Length: 383
Ligand SMILES: *Cc1c(COP(=O)(O)O)cnc(C)c1O
Image (cartoon, rainbow, N blue to C red; front, side, top):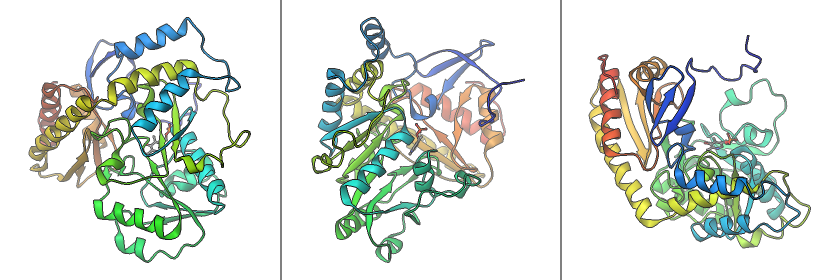
């Protein structure tokens, strides 16, 4: 009997080794990994630069608490602000914690209460994260939610322009909804959200936990729409697999997060910072990001062939975050693809989500598409 809480319906395979785009299970079977820990190992598994940075730090010092100066945090923060609209960074340990802090920061800095978020969003599993999430299935059974959250339909300009909520501290959204089904926001919708924030003197919080750190071909996905967020939450790809998150905010918010106002024991731990610095040095590079854009465009163009299949309703995505929406539940196809040697995951019941590493090879994308076409048209092929 397993002594783990059964919070996950786990697949019956265990990965024992992985490198780059590939993972090997305990039986020796090899998989092309287009999950990458759910958009976490953006540089692929076992990246030598990140490994070396952690190994070097491992023998120096791991953890000293945030009572001390931390040059590694300063360096990592400098990289995040040089590549975003923000000026100040707070390091934490996960995505939910980053959103939790973002919501605290927005309320304290504005003195206002309400937070507007969107249907089908996903913002994490803590009480503030659940409250912010626009999906009832995440909240059921957990008692009273944190108050002050209001949900609007996503990509709906009309709903924004007629929104009657007052006393708004912030509007919070994903630029591409990840868990909600790989739904990219329309540019006009994002512009309307930015204008709404200006009109209400509300802060704009962009949840870049899944879309950030190069995933869409920019350092952060909001750049595609020229947004100017006040707060950005980051996690998943930030440490290429080492647990770490961050809140990035504008300078004017600095006063709200004064000494004693917010904190964490582990956040900004030196091993995490070694991983972040090594990861950002590779990802926040124009040449690297333009290759991600090219690879993303290639993947979406290849997916046009998948779109022709009878069961496929739509293909969509941004950069190397892609979704294949089918007319029916995709669980069985995901299992079949795994048997064929391709790891992909669902996003909602009907969408197959592809999250290859950002340095994926063209030939690997070709192999994945070939397997998908065969499985979705009920043939078989081995990757
Ligand atoms: C994964 C995710 C979160 C939650 O991050 P955790 O590290 O699992 O707490 C929040 N928002 C978005 C958009 C995510 O994809």
